[in-house]
Length: 319
Image (tube, rainbow, N blue to C red):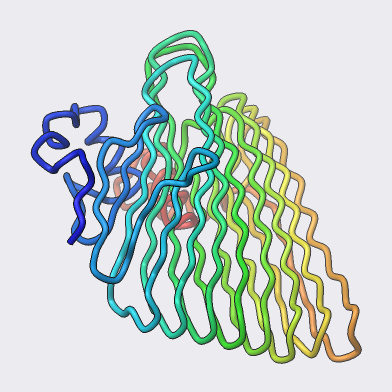
């Protein structure tokens, strides 16, 4: 295995309690992960490991990495979490993933922001995936913000996915809480017999704002896609969700967005269907509503307080 210039011993000393808590929240990590990984903190490489089948190298022309997965790689994972713990930092990163033919891998990303000061802490991440013929990926990206500072925590992720013939991807995009502003853009092109599932789960509270745009192009015969979005807006937060399916061949696509609105929040849900081929079958459904009173009553009769009952309902809804 290849080890970066920063070895595991030094890495373990550099992880403070805040780092460890962020890694656990955004990547389900308890210390250094197994397999290939790249950990970035405050704009710099903290630690990196490649494996025999997954190589991670720094880009030469801009900040970011190239992740190359060899054809046929199975049952392996790569973790690429980002930590921002400095107020006043704007971190920008470009990551490219080349998934070889017939491979099947798990990719875990995510960004945790701990803002201790009065200035903005921001991370913009551009992730591009090229999933080769017959390959499959499961991609999980979680975002989370915290910190005692008054400065905003801003995350602007952009995800670009190309599925070649017979390739498939399961994409989970999750915003847990604590992000003051986010502009989320996801673009995908699905080739012949390709299959894409995008699941987005989002929570906003306070005066936060979230804008999500998902565009999927069904470009090849027998391509299929599902976009499944669930969100909760609390307090005075605002959300705008847009999802567009474009059928350019004999294909099938479905968009389903379901939201819970609370307090004085605002939600806009705008699914779009564009059929550019006579055999493109595209459907959508959308719903926005409040927590059902009978659900609260049922849980409260079981001994939960109203807050505990609400938290239980929301956790189940966003799981």
